[in-house]
Image (tube, rainbow, N blue to C red; front, top):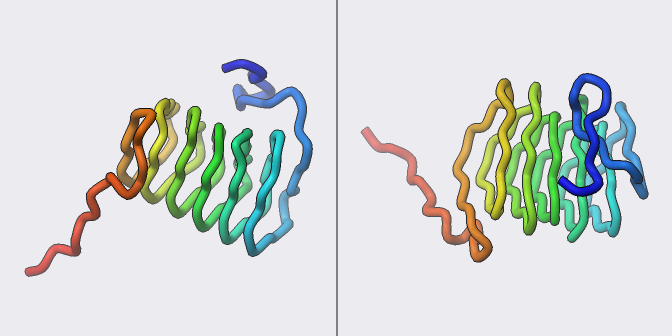
Length: 134
C-alpha cells in the first residue's frame, strides 16, 4: 500500500497523520475528516472520510464507518464501507457487515460478519439473515 510502512510489532503505520485520538479518550457523535486519523480510544457513532482511518490495538469503535482506507488492529462493531481497501490486523476483531473492493485479513484477527466485494458493492446489497425460528 502506498504511504504505509511496517512499524514496531509489524503494525502498519501511515507516515503522516492529521489527528490522533489517544488511549483513554472517548468520543460520541459524527467524526468527519480529511487526511489520516488514528484512534486509540473509544468512539461511538459514525466516521466519514475519503481518506485513511487507523484503529489502534486499544481502540473500540461502535457504529458506522465510511472511509477510503481502513487499517485496524482494534475492535469494531458495526458496518464498514471502504472505497479503497480494508486491512484487518491481529489481535483486532470486527463484527458486522463490510463492503470494500479489497480486503486483507491477517492471521489472528477475529472476523464475524459478512462481506461484499467489488467496486459497485454496497451494504444494501448484502442480504440480511433473519433470526432462525424453532
